[in-house]
Image 1: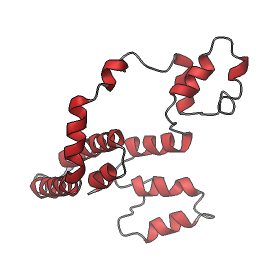
Image 2 (image 1 turned 180 degrees about the horizontal axis):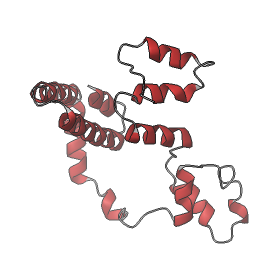
Image 3 (image 1 turned 45 degrees about the horizontal axis):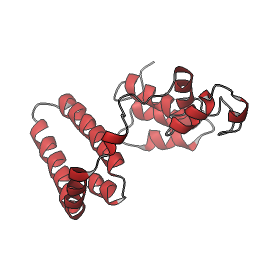
Image 4 (image 1 turned 45 degrees about the vertical axis):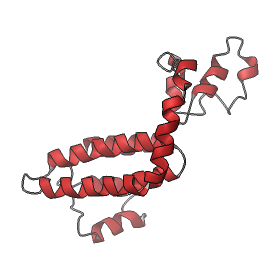
Length: 173
């Protein structure tokens, strides 16, 4: 259903990227499920995706009709637009170059202005850390690792909540 809500939000590009991410997640989950559970999981994911697209059907027809006459890709060659090398670090450390557009007036090359103009957002260190935890942590200790981000076990309420959760399992040391 989230894909339908994402389409209703008015950003079809974001809905498309959300759908690709959800598809990648579903394929990964399907591949890691037990063989006897896969068919049921596939049915649930398919039913959810189709119900979201059906809920957004009143928007899909005008969108498809508009795409038939739109010429956005003819005006801009998106295959050649990218950040310069120094701009890639701005995904993790967005204010490394100072406040937005603040030092661009002193940059004779125009690279800072180009970076700030092309940077559509940033990843940030906390999100990058959680992505690494999710990628590298075993499945059972993932909840513990994510909860421990909030602080030490003695001071943070998050690890106590994790211990109370039935799905939490302490990692072996």
